[in-house]
Amino acid sequence: MRIIAGTARSLPLKSIAGKDTRPTTDRIKETLFNILRTDISGSRFLDLFAGSGQIGLEALSRGADYAVFVENNKKAGACITDNIRFTRMQERCELLVMDVLSALRSLDGKEPFDLIFMDPPYRSGREQEVLTYLASSALLKEDAVVIIEAALDTDFSYLGQLGFEMIREKKYKTNKHIFVSKEV
Image (cartoon, rainbow, N blue to C red; front, side):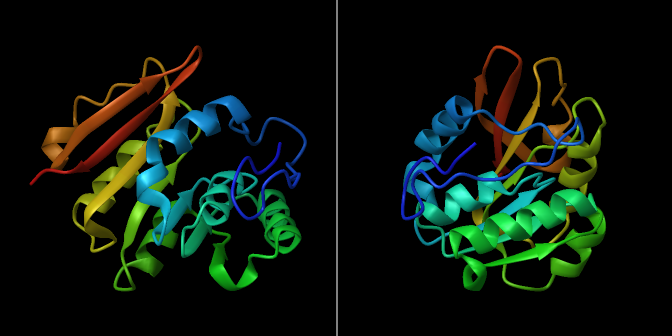
């Protein structure tokens, strides 16, 4: 696992052993950032269920101004801290080692985000909980995009009820990325 492009290109990243996290493959990460390429520069990026922090660090390497990482697992949090130090991006990011909804509540009222990426445990329903919270929060800028990594069979039919619309879906062999924004 490594940073693919930008100022920290090719730097290797740590991940925790075991099945507590599912690192996004380089191929899927590259596709994701090719889709987001015009949105990254100067953005505020929120990486939820951050695992090793590789997605938020990739965003910083590619020109995001600031990233916040949220991870509940303490071992993964320590891994993110190591990766932030190794990439020398400490001044441009913040790590919250706590439950996602608690973190969102602590961030509400602060500067909103342009991009929010979440990779919750598959089939856990956590993405719906987060989107429900985001629907009534001030965490999203007007044209913000939320990207959800999910199992292929994850149902997102509830998006409209929350005031979101799917603007893109990218399917891979075993999972997919859903891109959503607030309905205008």
